[in-house]
Image (cartoon, rainbow, N blue to C red; front, side):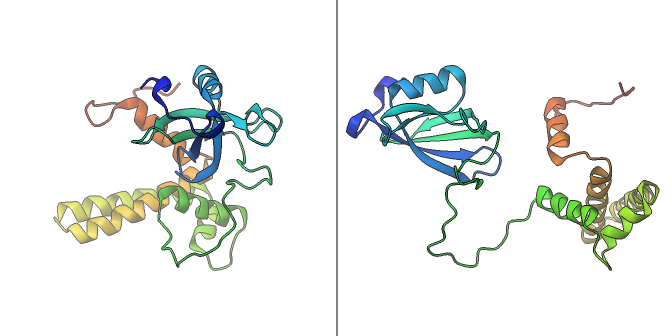
Length: 214
């Protein structure tokens, strides 16, 4: 859409909600004028208008915590914006990841599970071993032990699938995924790196086989 059609409010400003492109966490709410939007679109770096200083400011210009524009959308009334960004560091001047950290009210929100969350927990057990932790035990024994477990769990997945036992296969796939994440931690391979590799391959529609490793 043409930014000329946006409906700017008082002082020719429009509010923008800035979100982390990966976590979708709201980082900040700021204001933009037409010039700051044009600069943001040109350089792909979030640039706002400060109502207190009455001047343009580029996020990260002094702190180094730039916000790289991924997406900029307007709402149905075209009087508010949402920006998805990749951030180089904390969004808040206090050093917090997001400006929204003061809780007024909050229910017990079930924690959403993710592979990244599990990866980070596994990394904690690697960096700070915990007595009685199976994960810490695997890191203590080293890569050879981890690889052996991956081999065993891979076999269990095959056995479960061959038996047409869906419940057992789900259980064994989960075991295999966990041990693969342990190996990734051991070799300092991030979930993001694997996701990016899959994204490059278009694995759904094309058979990909690496003959050699460079």
